[in-house]
Image (tube, rainbow, N blue to C red; front, side, top):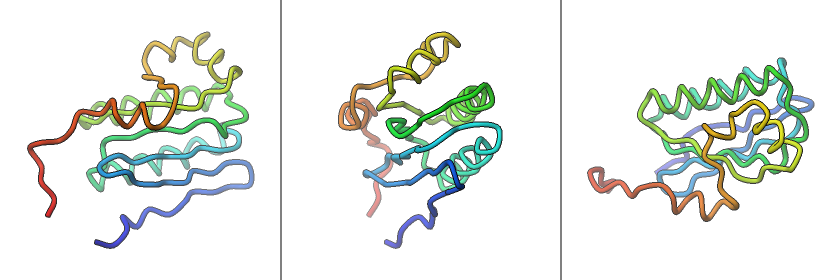
Length: 132
């Protein structure tokens, strides 16, 4: 089957690279998530949801900076995924980003995992869908 057709989203200071692990979409976020880049993350998540890819892991180890717009965008994309019956989890939080999520209480909403493998294992297996 051909790739999902999802292209990496890149700006001068922000990029999202998408990989697939079965039914789970792994998004590697790098750079600065600010007012200018938040739309790129939203578009990326929106495209995945339109393709029926509702299991998402955000890898934030490459995220260097997060401002109030970026925080709001993380909350918005999380809500949009959940509203569509999906799940979104985060991995790779630096101590700085983790502190921001704690201060804003997003830490209580976004399920965080120590590594990608643990996050992948936390998704329930889909038994009602078979892809042949």
